[in-house]
Image 1 (cartoon, one colour):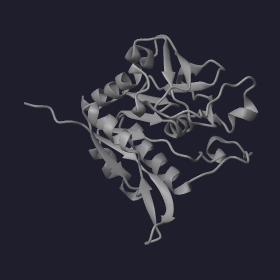
Image 2 (cartoon, helix red, strand yellow):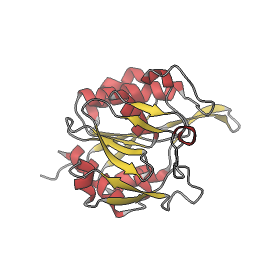
Image 3 (cartoon, rainbow, N blue to C red):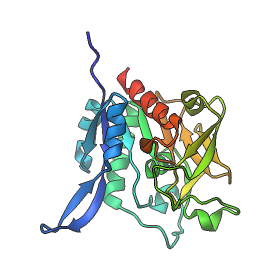
Length: 239
């Protein structure tokens, strides 16, 4: 009997009203969906309806929490300060929090990408750096000026981490498009990728079937390890 391709949910960005209709819009880059399809999954885009998360989580085989040009509300990780650069999308975050929680409860595979990694970290008990340039001495450039389908810097993978086993290498070249980052990971969570300036670039929860977050965008497949990560995620959702 042929095994069915797993259904992989992808979270959507929320855009302001535009066009003739002046109505709100959802958006997602094609390569998010293309990377999942190339890895053998069926991408399914998820509208921001919190009341449906239980039914969605029951049907989905895996979840990708995508990135976007916005930040997690600092109050969600216990920070009563707010950097001037912080911009939030409350509705999107509320949905992503709810669907991620539902998938965690069902122990279904989760891949957090960029802002999705940051949300996953906060949900697992971690905290965030609100603005790298003001918080990290000697930081490298994390908002690269070159195209996103090219590398911005390298990361070192934590040996014996699941990400290290998946990629089969100690170093990856990654793209970089973020001004925030993980400050600390939650209890039991592993920082699995570190930039040369010490900024945490990835995390995983070894207690879960598959729960990995990366600060870069593997859907662009800048490094061979990116394709290996996407394939491992879809494979975990297939079981």
